[in-house]
Length: 316
Image (cartoon, rainbow, N blue to C red; front, side):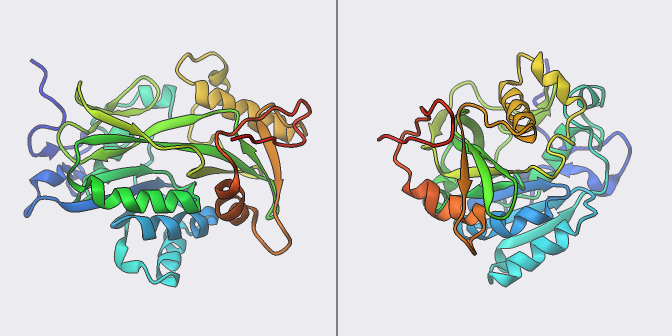
């Protein structure tokens, strides 16, 4: 009989790095307290943290950021932003010094119990959570004004709930401080909220890590327009993948295929169907404009129907 990965005291890694063995948080002295913690696993995400962290820190009981070998000052920037907004008491910075396998073929070749495994890395990160609920958050995901309010309301409600929450997000491809492209052509609603228990731990899947869930759970999907995912057009968006070209043929990568298509089209000077150009007013960063003004004011559902994609027509 296979023993569930979340059972027992924790996991020891193959390399013998005892300081980085995993102890399941529900086995820690005192157990878990009510509330919700957002967990960010990041590498070289410094530019976006001034947008990502403030609304997240306000919306959650705690934010844990795990820096995986950044060389752009990500950890220092995270501490600076938390202090600037007077929310350092809600913030914890951890360091994970091992190189983690990239998603795809590289991930597939690494043993699940290695410190280089995506699954091990994720379990280690979430083992530092001390609340009964957790949000799997990315270092480039920014809550809109509505999203912050919704997440804050949920953070106290899910403290004892046995439910998984799906959080929609839209890719925001940033060309400059004032100009970006919002992809409304892909409605991506992943599972981002999970209870902290032996039933919800990470294991190895063919191309990335996956969180285990019981057969019968309550699942809730939040409405669209609550979160954007920053994609800097002058950066390397797919550095964490072994072979991005494989998106074209993988049956499991519909979302990544769409991102690859949009990314390459915008670099070629084309605006794909379902993508809208947004220019912020003078003196306002386009990320702030989209999250504080543009998306909160946009009627729902989003409908893109302009044949030349120069305008976005929205109808309620």
